[in-house]
Image 1 (cartoon, rainbow, N blue to C red):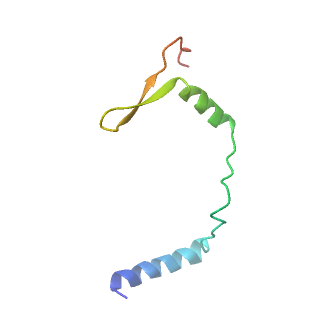
Image 2: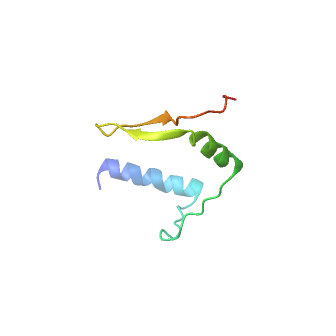
Image 3: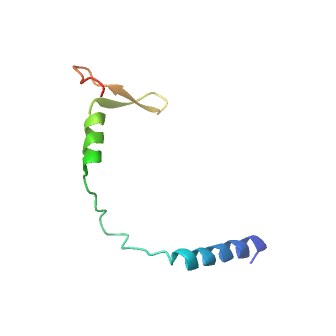
Length: 72
């Protein structure tokens, strides 16, 4: 091993001693996604925008036409 690799391995061993080993779950298991109040509020705020893509592939948001609620 090179000196850099040995130093890295030493640091990761110490981190494992301090924080515990990295646990790996089942990678094939579906992600559990909970919808909390903050996420619902964010989805409501973002529902007033449309995602656009220009000819160069850049993405940006524009407000949807129509009446909008005033800013809080």
